[in-house]
Length: 125
Image (cartoon, rainbow, N blue to C red):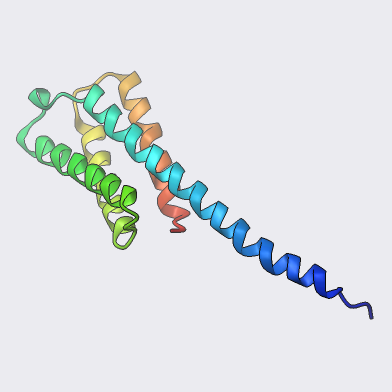
């Protein structure tokens, strides 16, 4: 049986944590970008004045969750972020399904939701 030379094992020991750290950093950047884009798209495509009171509450809650999530991520606080993301997804989904918006806007926000769900499902912070 052949044995790995000591330097090969040392190299592996050094590379694995670096690869994990890079993967984690990539995930966090992807999450930040998705939250920023969704926040921007909600503000662009959904107008509060056109919403019912219930829709407005969900819309406001979703924006609040996204903005707090973004602030927490920028500050490096990831505890509780997945739960906040899940809550934002639920609120956004409810608004997108019922808001008086065009089909193109609904599709764009649907893509945003898909991306947020993908991030939630692959949560790695």
